[in-house]
Image (cartoon, rainbow, N blue to C red; front, side, top):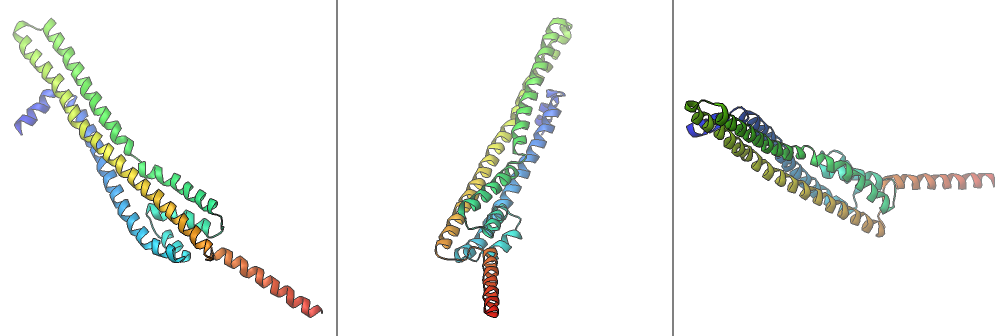
Length: 239
């Protein structure tokens, strides 16, 4: 413990900004890990509940369930099933789901870039501390009294080396976390794209088998039938 404290003290002023940057970057990394892990579980639960309904062609129940869901899968399928509720064309449903993906992807990637940014800042602060330490070392050699020269030179070199080391100690874990978060985000986006394709395939398959596409189309059909019946009745009355 004493070694760590001495290492930090010998590094001088620039150790504190590096420490703050490392803590903030670590906080962003932890927040992203937790957020993505919870979202991944919510997506899995929602899809496991919705998929059997889609297979049976129970689009009304599926629509109600996804509207009540806070998951990314719920957001994606809400857009697709809302359009499916008013049109029969696959292209329109596909466009709606692509639009939903364009809205969801930035939400998944939010704040991830800050992890990489703080890793770079920590490295640069370490380099800055190194340069300042070397400048102090040259000044000590040039201007200090011979009795003080050795101590000043030693302190300046310690500052230069310690800030470099501490900057790398802060930056390397942040870069690892950044790549892990990116990988997790890409996996979630890939799973959403797979769900989108499966949903479109199910809707197309069920439509070809003769399932009623939507309640809206059913209502329109009923209105047309009612109008035809009224027309027949009025025709009979006039005759």
